[in-house]
Length: 238
Ligand code: SAM
Image 1 (cartoon, helix red, strand yellow):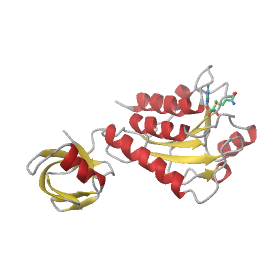
Image 2 (cartoon, rainbow, N blue to C red):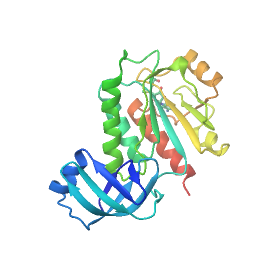
Image 3 (cartoon, rainbow, N blue to C red):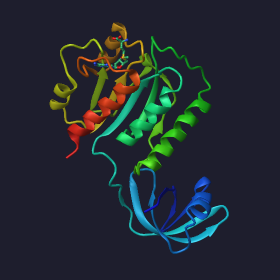
Image 4 (spheres, helix red, strand yellow):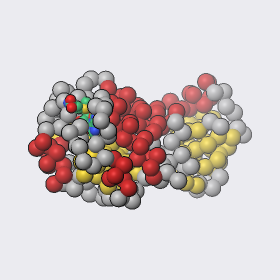
C-alpha cells in the first residue's frame, strides 16, 4: 500500500502537494478511487482513497486517524557531534530507519568540521534526508533535524534518560544504565571522530547525562549512534 505524508488535513479530506503529486500521477499512475495510506508526520496515519488528481494537488477522502504502528515506544533524540563531511547524511538516514525521533547536530571541541551560521542550507539538506528515509521506512513521523548547538550550550529539558556514549567509560555499560531506567524520552550523545575531552564529559554529566560504555570495541562515530539507538529500542520494545 502506497503511503504519503501530508499536514493539509481538514475533516475527512486531506491534500498532498509538491513532488508527491507527480509521483502519484505519473510514476505510480494512481487514479481516483485507489486506496493509499496517509501519515500526518506527527505519529498518526489513516487509510484513504484518492478523490481527485489535479496538476498541483491530490485530494483524498480519509478514514479514521490512528496512531502510526511503526513508531517505537521510546522517543530517542540523537545529539550527534558533527562528523567529517558526508557522514551526517548516512547517520540521519540509518537512524531514521532505526526509529530516531529527532537529531541535534553538536559542535564539540574535537569536531573536525566547524559549522558557521547561517546553517539553513545544511539543515535543509539533512531534513530532506530525514524525510526521504521516513517515507522509505514507513515511519509515522518525519524526524526533525535541529540547528547545530555548541556542546556547552546543550540542555536536556524534558528527557527522562540522558546517556553520553563515552569511549573511556569503564564502569557503566549501556545495559546497566537502561536496566535502572524506564526510558521513554531518551537523549543520546555521540562524540566526533576525535572523541570527547574529560572536560566535555564533566559538562555533560553535570547537565544530567550518564556516561556509558558501548563495549570494549571502539566504534566509528557514524556507527556508535546507530548501534546505541538499536540497542535502546531493542531493550524497551515489547
Ligand atoms: N577518539 C576516540 C578514541 O580513539 O578512543 C574514539 C572516538 S569514537 C571514534 C567516536 C564516538 O563514538 C565516541 O566519542 C563515543 O561517543 C562513541 N563510541 C565509540 N566507541 C565507543 C565505546 N566502545 N563506548 C562508548 N562510546 C563509544
